[in-house]
Length: 100
Length: 187
Ligand SMILES: [Zn+2]
Image (cartoon, rainbow over all chains, first blue to last red):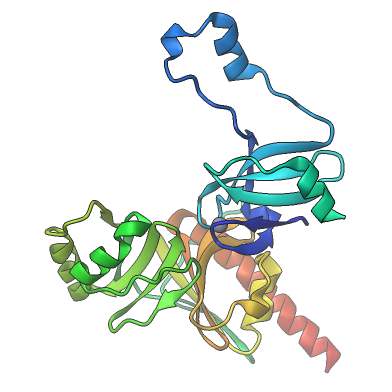
């Protein structure tokens, strides 16, 4: 089983307590009525679906209940870091350097 | 024919050498408290209840127990009198918060004895070695969401939603019998 670090509990806990919650840093347009249909479609449905490192949201649903963000490798499942919702996305190059 | 666990009765479900499982009578009130982290200290002073600021910790309290479950969430089990008092005090609190009586939502199971940790570890994915007295958290037990409290060494409390309780209790009983059978064999 994977172990995931919850930035709110500040503990590394079993995956079973967590739920995946889609791509991170997808910002909802401030005024949806002024956005073109294409831009709104992109916001709702278009995701990066990368093969490699990705920013994604997780929820510690069977724990503290919080949503947070993570950087995970989609092939190896390795978590490079997790951080609180609202914090800026960490730099991937620096993370990879630190991981080696 | 569908196999349904019997409804739970209050009292001991299992009592064997080093292990007991008990369903507690519902003598206390359960209160769920939500308040923003910045208002925690103010509210704690106004309702005169210690609110631990670290997720996973309990605070010592006469007449009940309180645990911090999330950055803005606390669970309390209090005597009926104390619960009423806390609700009255919260009515005039100066900070926004939500205090909800959820007494009927859950049942409490107590697992005790020197095999208690072994029994829990069958169903709970957490590392229980570091789950020492004074800790409490929301987690899973046999995939059922529970609030797990370590009340003392070899004494754990499980708050489980009423509708899940017979299912969880039957799995705990099965595991307890398996632990006993294994011990009997190895003697
Ligand atoms: Zn958490």
